[in-house]
Image (cartoon, rainbow, N blue to C red; front, side, top):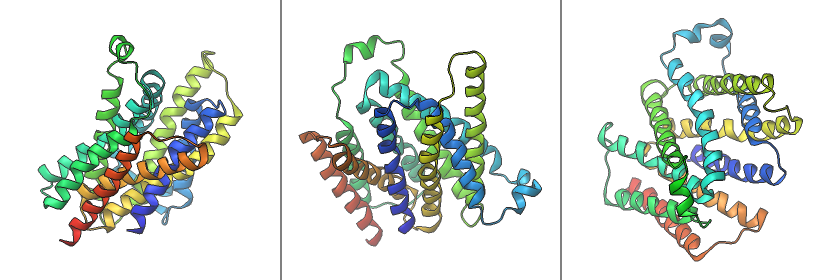
Length: 295
């Protein structure tokens, strides 16, 4: 339970940091790149056993290709999410990313045959409603969204986050139930770092951007909770017997609740009646899902 709570707190910190950096006009792409570099460094520093990494024996691990693919996917989807936020608004980007939890939940029921009861089912249904209501903050320009050439972006973000969660879920069940979590996370962030640095280097060489030192500082600040959020999620999946169909919704809903509370206290954001209703649904959903484990 502790790992799940820590995952929620670390995950909720990320949008709050993004909002802070946006207000300070810090270039977000470079921040994302250096965030992954920092996360990779953290992954190596906190690695319990460094011998496999230093000696190169990690190459034989079955999870390595999965970690590389996930790392490349993370930085691409993270950047697509930022573009979606700019083009379509915070609401669309938030709904698209958070509703990705439907993929691992359905996979848990259909493929992994995880058991569920009516409390869990009602809780998950309420979870989907809660995520939508909690995310609806901006008035969207529907017509411009429909006519935009980038109309498909929210759908890519939705599917992208869902697929990444499913792949993480698969890696956990196939390779990481007892060992290898820290190494797996390390190589996800190494892969994301290399991908991001390659793109940034190309943009610098082509003269399309310049290096901003403040992005490096912002990336370091964001990289620590980003690293911890993934580590704690995998730890929660490995140690809790709730099943991934429960852990993913609770993690997503908890992050929505914490980030919303942070927005209220730090940025004095105002909640509409719909947002408040969404938080109520979130509280009820988490209660139902948690109680389902004691039924």
